[in-house]
Structure formats: structure tokens, C-alpha cells
Image 1 (cartoon, rainbow, N blue to C red):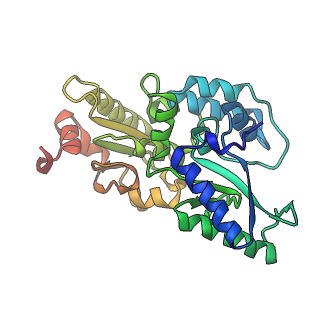
Image 2: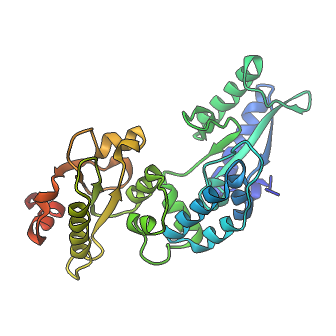
Length: 302
């Protein structure tokens, strides 16, 4: 059972949680914090609710391909749970495993207020705004999978950095190619966001668009991967494969694919969505190592 102890939160978040309760109390709102640290097993069980065995195994393979076999193993042990779906986060992917989130509910007459419409919705709005005023992120604002009870604080770190902080660096060589090899029907938005969060210098996003010859695409991709593994460049450029750019979420689509015919995009230094799309290439422009070198390291960056 998930803990409700504030002592298990990161020091700064514990201070923010106490301040959240205090500010609510001053305004006559009794705020109960009922979930702080949640174990990997509890998260895996929550993810399994409303999902099929294949969907559960898909999440396990994703975690293993990203370099966290122990987290994948925890997910594999879960069978399908009752509907509805509760979360998109597998074990290790929720901030509850990192001491950086808590769930809470306002009380009225000593009873929790779960409804979020009418007068109850106004109560939740006040609770959310108070938390945001302290510097918390309130999941009641999220456009997708809105969760009124959830507040979190990342201190500006990406999820991949938080996972590394808690569990250590990922095992082995992990990239989108590894995820493809694992046989996943990809959640390509999640995979690309994870790749963008890593502190890589420069990498290419390859997109397999309709009308692109599969053999040509695969041959070019293999040339690029071979180039990246050479002693001269190993550890610097990275390759990320996206098979269906039109299915990416809107932010990522705007970053790497704007509906045009070009299947290869170079992204600049940086991390996250702050990276810039700096150039696009046709496959035939990457015919040999010299062209691939130019794609990763154009003259202005040498």
C-alpha cells in the first residue's frame, strides 16, 4: 500500500506539501495528503488496470529496451486489472517512485470531496491554484489524463534524469533501435521524448514516410549507425528512428516533421523540446560517410 508519510518526499517537496496544507487551512480548506511514495510494484499494478496482457508486456519490453530490466521484470509480473485505466506510467516512470509527487484531497465535514464539478470543482480549483502558487505542478491542468489529486515537483529535471537519479544509469546500449528490436508497437512520442531528454550532442531523427522505399531507408539507416559506432564519433552523434511521424504528439510533430516529404531531420545540441530543428535531408543526401559527417557536423560547428 502506498505511503502517506511526508517524510518520504524530497526535502523541498515536503516543505512545499506542508505549506500547501497550511495555506489551505488558512482559507478554511482541510487538505488530506494520502499518497506520497508508491513502490514500483504498486505502480506496475496500477498501470495494469484496464489493460490487456499484450499491453502490459509491451510496457515491460519498453522499460527493458530503455535499459531498466529490473523495472520491466516488475511489470511482467502483473496480470490485467479491472477497468478503468489509471495511469500511463509504468514502474519507475511515475514521480511517486522518486519522492517528487503526492496525491491529496480536500475534506468537507471530514469526508473527501472527489467530484470535480459545480461547487466541488470550485473547491478543487482553489486547492490547485494554492499549490501552483507555491511552485508545484498541478495535474488538474494537464490536457491529457487530467488528475486533480496529483501535485508534483521536478526541480527542472526531465523524467529520464529522475530515473537515472533513483535507479542509476541504464544498462547497456539503449536507443530507439533497441526499442524497435524489442518488437514493440511503439509509443513513439514517449520514446522520442526520452531520447530528447538525454544530454546528447547532436542526433538524427529518421522518419519512415509513405512512399519511401523500405530497402533504401534501411540501408541508409544502417550506414548512419555504422558511422556513429566508429571510434572517431562513438558517444557523440545518436540515431533515433521514428516510423510514423504523423502519429507523434503535436509538440514533437512541430519539432521534427511539418508534413513535408523529407524523412530525415538533424536536431541541434541541447536537451528536451529546447532543441532546434536545424536542417532536413533527403535519404540520397546521406550517400556516404562524408555526407553523414556533414549532417552531424556542418561546417559552422566544426
